Image 1 (cartoon, rainbow, N blue to C red):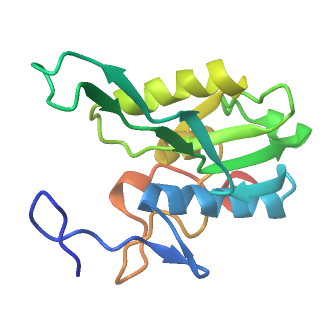
Image 2: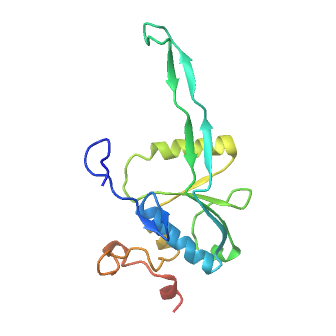
Image 3: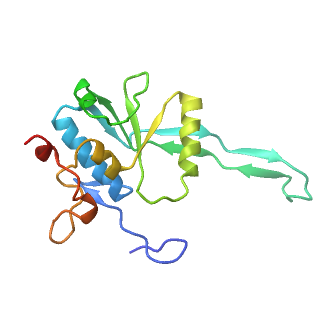
Length: 178
């Protein structure tokens, strides 16, 4: 297992259907998207298909007493999209809260439930809108599943394949339609 630069072991990235995901939350939202596609709530699903250049690397001149090179380097900044899809009218049966863009696509960045510092995403979200007129929806899967449905594969324990405690109150699509 590789080590991360801050010490300790780096977690293995989750894999499903030979697709490597950045997080478990991203994989679980993919489960939802698969079901939604099959049930015709969405169409035209795309995953990690696009990287947007937010700004290029640049140099800011300064005094050589501040930096011996005579400049400060600002690194370039990119944003990689998690998912994008087109919702069908059928999805409007749920108060899902996703905002489609003018082109009809919903752009999604999945986040975990940890209440950490989300400043980087917030800034990139604003830059995406300013530069490309694309609104990125922030989705915390467990909260989104409460508004729609829990995918069959999501929230299962690794060994027994039982539903995890935090997912017990959520209903699958089958359970909602019984």
